[in-house]
Image 1: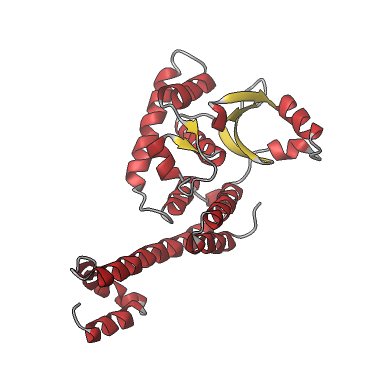
Image 2 (image 1 turned 90 degrees about the vertical axis):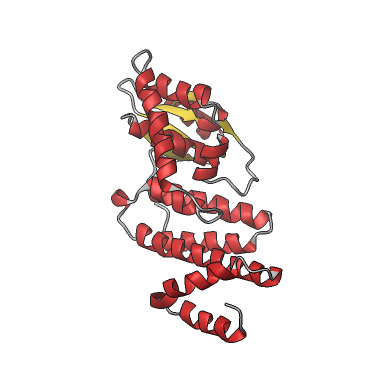
Length: 260
């Protein structure tokens, strides 16, 4: 792609989804151009095309019924908004952690095994709420994240290890919930796995004026979790001045539909 005519022809191709694949080799060639202006514009265009393809996949994914909505896949698509996420690599890493949990369950209770592996051996920790890179894939790389991301990792690992664990969208703080015969235990993954009983949390919420606190401690759907993640994304990207990603987060949330 060296002439204006070729560039205009490329734009025509890009407007047609059926022809877009034919145009990509020219874009990749232009992204290596010696002209820094052209190189920068083309790389930006390639990034926009990548995100547009992810959005098309997101649209298909969130059209599924709630029971068929895959939390891990949804989180990976969200991660792709800011950087490419390798689904196979993420899945393998979560598999490896869950394997450590299953091995540790020989010696301690399932909940203790899950918590000790995630927070002691793997050293997952709470991170900066204002970090615009708070998505599943980066959190796995850095071992830090905000409550909803860490709790989601806890849920994904726990379910792989066979534990009845789910996410809980409590007011202002996202938790993990583990079902046990003697009652539910709630895990604060942002604070190194600190645990609470339902009665304690319900009383705490009630004391802060939350009506019907127990309904906030019920497991939430994957759609609700993704909706809350996108709320965080829109807020943080807006505060850090990335209007493009803030608008994208709002658009993806609209595609997701009502939180429920």
